[in-house]
Image (cartoon, rainbow, N blue to C red; front, side):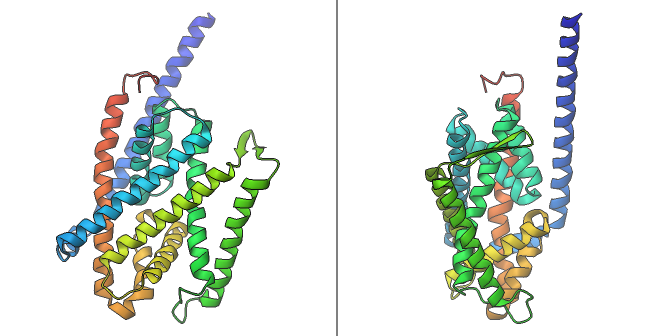
Length: 319
């Protein structure tokens, strides 16, 4: 009787997993269609056509480097979490997750796709949670280091009428630098490195891994700014482009708008539109979205379908 109950329980779990997977894929498909319908594809094509081949190629190299740096977050998380998946598979999962994250939001991309792909590769939920948490912390510690330095030094001047104001932005920058410093000191010196919160283990990484988090993330943000700098008209100081990007990124994250549609544009237009022209700013942002968001998303869709096709029917050890 017990054997029959166990077999029935396994069948029930298998059916439930299939239903959850089908719902997840349906949600992704709906979001992709909605996202595609929000874009003016003619404007995207026109923006790209306005650039020379060398300029687009230089931006493309930056895109590839940025995605490799982002994949390195998960490689560092591999050492932090202690799993044994191959480095190639880890970078593949990170690339797919990042592309969907940028276009459809963190809940679907960074969380949903990571869980789907890592679980299909044999990792348990606790390990996936550690990977996800490590990656999120990495992304924002590097952001806080760069943004904190730029804002605290007053290198980003907000236009008159913005509620926060340049003085307020300095205070935010100082707070960000304090937060990063506290995190690094905690990883280096805190005697109790692990806590249990509601049954979940939270552990600080070693100082070496924490330093790697900050450096990889800071390098990634610097490369993203370099991509935009290559696409914007000449004459804008690179630190200004970096500062505007960082402001736009946190605004997009706060509003939870998929791909930051409209938020990033509003930030760049508000801070740079008066000095270089709104048409030039919009053209650069359209080209940036095509190269950094849409191109990798199309590749990620193909890679994800291939991943699922190979994983179907194999045991975790074979994957």
